Length: 229
Ligand SMILES: [Zn+2]
Image: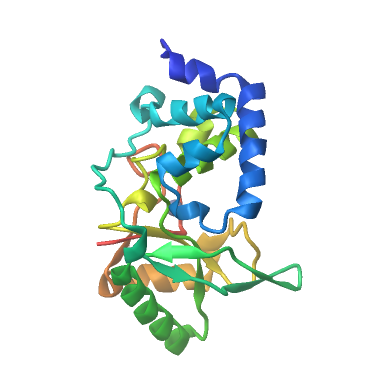
């Protein structure tokens, strides 16, 4: 397999880790990182850390045998998105708050409907663990996952590169859902009553599970990831 230069740059784990740590510092102070534009992001990271970030934009999932579909995303308008704030979950018995998420007005309607029906049926609700991500934020997410795994192959099966993620698609948004009482990494979501309720009611709600088990895309099974139809 021949790697292009951008891929090679991302194989330098020291540089990837360094850029990831620098971005972590931004994360602490930038309230709306999830809707940051590429120009804004490039203006606040140093020249050196820009390189691995830009390299993420050049990644081709097919080189890694993963079929993330490239989305022709028109420029998003941050003003058209709806903020979802004050979402509380419980981790090890302690209440914690999720970071502010953004969704489209259409998805807000879907989520209100979902919440009302799920509460009525099973006495539970779910939270939006991750909503809209701008392509620039998607690059951050990819780079930080890469810093943790050290493997582009592994990262590619879990996080799409920018402009390939359904979280970047503001005309047909996908979100990650989580339970309220499990903690931030809801890895057993597929065994939950919430998940089974979603499976049974998805069509009525107008959402679908993007990456079921053994999906043909070579993307990991993601029981929490639902896209509007
Ligand atoms: Zn997702």
